Length: 178
Image (cartoon, rainbow, N blue to C red; front, side, top):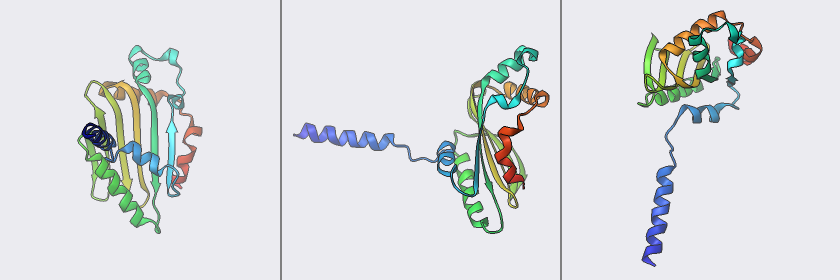
C-alpha cells in the first residue's frame, strides 16, 4: 500500500515538474495568432525567389540553414494603447530569459529594436528581432533554422539584396503599414 502511494506521488510530482509554465515566444505566438489586434505570418525560404544555380557555395549553405520565419505584429491605435503596453511588456519579459542572448539593441525608451538569438555562436537555432514604436505597434520576427551562425545570417542578407522577394507572402503585413 505504501509503495502504491509513493509511486502515485512520484508520478504526480514528475507530471507537475515536466509541465513547463514558463513563457516562451513560441507559446506567445500560439496564444496571440488569432487575436484581433495581431497579424500573424509564416514565411518560407521560397519568398526569396532566387536562382539557386547562381548562388555561391557559401550563399547556398546560408540559404539551406534557414527554415522559416514566423512574424507576429501588433497594430497599435488610439484605442488599444493600454493593450499595446501590456503586450510589449510581455515580449520584453520573455526576451529577458537567459536563453535569448541579445546581440544588439537600437533606440531608446518607447521606440527601438533588438536582435537576440537562441543557441550557441556556432549553432544558432533561432534569431529574434523585436521592433516597436508606440504609434505603429510592434513586430516580433523569429528566424528559425538549422546550424545557423552569424556568417550565415550575414551571407543571407546578401542573398536578400539579390532576390526577387515574393510580395504575395507579405500581403498580411500591409495592414500594419496602413
